[in-house]
Length: 422
Image 1 (cartoon, rainbow, N blue to C red):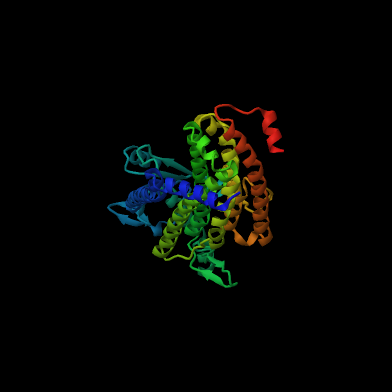
Image 2: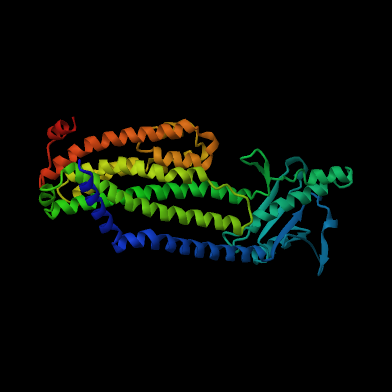
């Protein structure tokens, strides 16, 4: 194959793609639009939830067992009220008055301590139909009621220190072992979990989207060339193998630019969120570092297969159907993403690391979730498997590509395809 002609085809394909408005919008406009929409939706939800959480909620409590320490309650307009975290708990002497307040909508919920509470530990929780469906107060008040009951049960029976520890057994101080072996405190577990799971998910989706997007351009350009009969003109000066290589490199460069822009935006958002929340979170730098390498290898492997099968179709619709199987194989890691996030280094994750169709996404996810659990030889080994598979797919794909280009307007027989592949 002649390098100069391959470079000419590559430059032509690259320039024709990057000048399209659809490519520019997908590369630059779509991430910004998604970020604005996601940020707006998240901000609106956070505002309304915070407003709802700040509202004072009133609950009722009926103590039929006589175990609640009434000294915790204060007299407020003739009613005994206990206030905890913006929630008011009103102590009623009987069920009748409590149920009337619940039916009128004054109470969000009612808790009834049965007479046999000391033996059964049973507390009835009755929710009002007029309470908001997604109210958080019902879940926040119950731990406080448990603390009140513990305090009521141990008051006067234990020393003050022991009593305090029974009521509040432990205050957990979260930390994480850093890369240098030092304990890092002040870790926001919720944010850390969000980053450790969201970044692998976004990286996987971006990698897969860029792969399928670039491969889709391959299928589209091959179908267009065949339908426009420009193939006969191309074949007069360029071999099918040179056309395949040029299209692979040219459209692959466009896909790599797209993936780089998307990845940089994800990294910028993650770093900005981490700095804004003043929390220590784990940024999977190793996954981000090897992602471009796996994109290139995965693209060359899938792209060569898609080019070969797309060239066999008589039109664009038929070419899309023929290449659908490769796309389905590529998205397998996302289908089992829950398993990979929960156990990234299990049997499934290790097996998918060595399959060329699934190795790019699988290795990125494993590195992002827990880089210490995957050995260096697994990463380099998966790259080697991809290289060998790419070499084989380009060799076989070039032959099928030549058959599909030469036999325009007709579908070659299976016997002819097998003979060319051999």
